[in-house]
Amino acid sequence: MFTGIVAEIGHVIAIQPDKLTVEADQILKGLELGASIAVNGACLTATSFTTDLFSVGLSPETLRRTNLGALKTGDPVNLERAMKLGGELGGHLVQGHIDGTGKIVGIAPEGSSTIFRFEAPDEIMQYLVEKGFIAVEGISLTVSTLGSRDFQVAVINFTLTHTNLQFHKVGDMINLEVDIMAKYAQRFSQFQRSRVTADYLRENGF
Image (tube, rainbow, N blue to C red; front, top):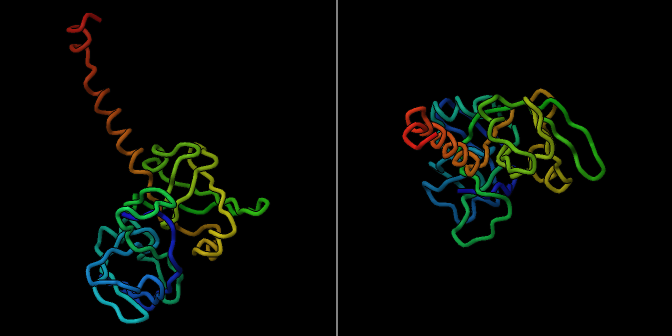
């Protein structure tokens, strides 16, 4: 489990069909084999590391769901270690299970912030609400405006300069993870609706 607060920006050293190697600094302190690291929001397992880089395994499912397969040597990636139980939750509960990818369709400055607009598929949009949480590239953000096929977030300068969003441009593909509470709420709602049948109504006097 993660918080969506990026610890540092790493850089891709090498990428293979089943392995990604990243240069890093802060998140390597106290790292152990098998530990979880979020790379652009995707929860991955550390399979090896040195004092200045680490490698994680890539599964076909991860490559299908995320933008990691499109990474190139030198690309910046957002990094976060798994949260510690009892630690500060600065963002929101992020599983590191990417739901899919979206596309940046707008970037515009607004005061001391930058407005990013993203297009996303219906299977992601259905879970979004204004002022609700969304993890973009592993960053905990708040939906400021919601359309039928797109949404906007306001990114403060500190977040922009401490994440890889500063390097992104219109047309780039980004990883998205919706709030797990929204998934449970929708699942519960679907289950409740499925129980209300014509027979159920008749049996209960409707």
